Length: 444
Ligand SMILES: CSC[C@H]1O[C@@H](n2cnc3c(O)ncnc32)[C@H](O)[C@@H]1O
Ligand SMILES: [Zn+2]
Image (cartoon, rainbow, N blue to C red; front, side, top):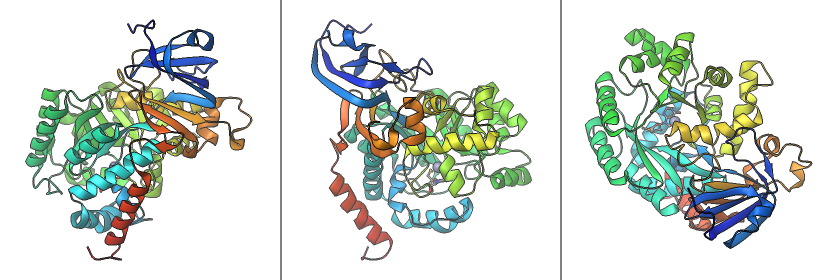
């Protein structure tokens, strides 16, 4: 049990405190105390003011919530933002993105693109993101340096990719990185077979065996489009999810990204295996991929988290905006205005994300003993007035520009909208230079 008698490093005194767990609770006139990177006190303001604290921050007009968790993305793809728009998935991938990746993606690209993604995400209230991209070791170094929390999925395909000429090589690198980082307090390594149409049974079985041995998660695009499902039925005689179930991949350590196509049998498989679903509504809308039936999944007991996908298919890493889109879309898809209410939407963007990534004991809610991964949203602006329900205001009426402060493991990474560890001007200049090279406006 944390010792509340010892001095706090930091005491936060917001207008509203939304712990997410217990569900639906909004605390007013409360304080939150942090020591050694962990939440050690949540209680009435009167009791909080009696505690000894090295630093006290009054946060008038602000709502304190767990940091947002972006459960799916391809961080370095920020450098391809807007490169190929308004196309369906396979045309976008095969004719535009994969050729651009073959030409441009190297360790420098991943370093600069990941830094840009981390900065954008911190400014948007994200304390933890899931990344699935090439050169995962480079991405993990950027996460380490920046102070943010992340799951890094090792990219595995049946064909050569930047950084690994075979799936075996990618898996070997993944096992090594897993070993190197298994005690890292903010980074979790998982295995990321790209999709059922790019990874055959043989490699999927290898991944299952290794993930089981290491107790590692598996992160994969699944049922992104109706075409993917139809092609699998035609070519293999089974739906992709049924194939993954037959191969023994589904389970609480499995993260199925997209799932826009769900038959009654698929739903039973997801529920019985306790598989996590990661919903990326804006990428699905932009690529016209389909609609994930979030309310149906939620009512059946499936854990649903939310992700932005990469900036080349979204085109931003705005998880607050994504959550609003998810809440609105869930109502349209379910044909019910009560689907995915604001409180459940916030839970999906925080605690459900942590659960999907297997880190719910560490983060995802404001609870005593958890890491201090916290965001302060400023609800004092005119567009938020009047405030009847601050969570409704946050989800339906607030943009990411209202993110004021952010802490990960008690370290402040955003202070009054200024990045404390990253140089915003430098990041913009570097990204612009990449844009000029890629669009051919300067010599490469
Ligand atoms: C091995 S992971 C990186 C790989 O995935 C590609 N990608 C990005 N977004 C999507 C998506 O929505 N569906 C399928 N594949 C996607 C990315 O460009 C990389 O090649
Ligand atoms: Zn993706």
